[in-house]
Image (cartoon, rainbow, N blue to C red):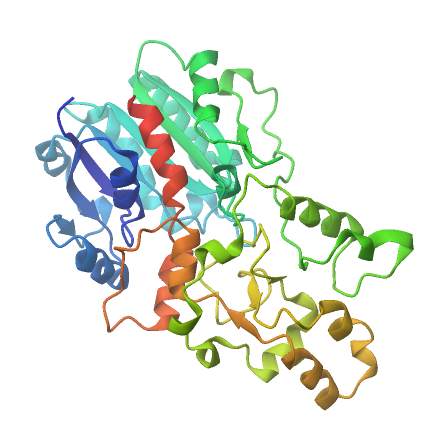
Length: 396
């Protein structure tokens, strides 16, 4: 097979490009398109030879797309219209305009791409935008498969449940055998971390699926702490805590320590949580240790906001969590702070977040990109290992 000509839409910092490299297929990115100037600086820094278009997608003509003569489209459209914590504007959200434009152009291309891969947040699968996507693919003669996958399915200790659709030109739908092969690409999938969604024709109702991966604060405490009806000292339910302890026992998932920077290379002081954050949000923090096999999804607000934006790392493992948190509310603010400081809680560095998202060591940020910007663009990116395996299965 010769080089596949790939069009990378919403290219961001190059997650799809790195997934292509990881997949092992022969390819050439004929154009990467994005309007985020910070993301484009990072993309150009890592892929200086790739044509990068700083344009709105809806500003590109049908003729321009036809001239690219691409075999594959990779895209991760804006997720804000579909995220569960947002307004869920769906196709009424202005940020969906470019995606609707793509769907309008697709049937009009002089040559349909052989392959399409789309990634988005949980919530997209029940959107009107997804219905339009499926309708367009069917009308164009694509066979496709939809699924929900989290990186834990490929042994990475990070929950980032996402919707994926892979499609190829065909006169038939993906067979059961093909569906099985897709799941086989994700070795030892953890419970509820990978799910093939039924084909549209098999769906009885448009009901939203059951929540697959709720995020609640937790620590890596031993199971004994939950025995005998003892009171939990973090803001979580017993069910949440037991589920996360089960995650930490899943040996198919690697430990957090495998993804950390060497200790001598990290300026710990720079990443320690400030006292105000500790005092205000201590009970909401998702705290993990180096031996944990889980962490919660890192979002673009990591480092600025606390609740639901990502896990923090306990550096002082000699201090037991129980001794710090139990009875914490009975202390004065100064005593609380001294207790919490014993844990030496820090944020994961941008490099460590990138590691957990599958970015290779060759990936780097230009010097002018601030730490805040690095967290933001990483939170908007995707897991490279998951996408690479999907690309490989889609093509081969």
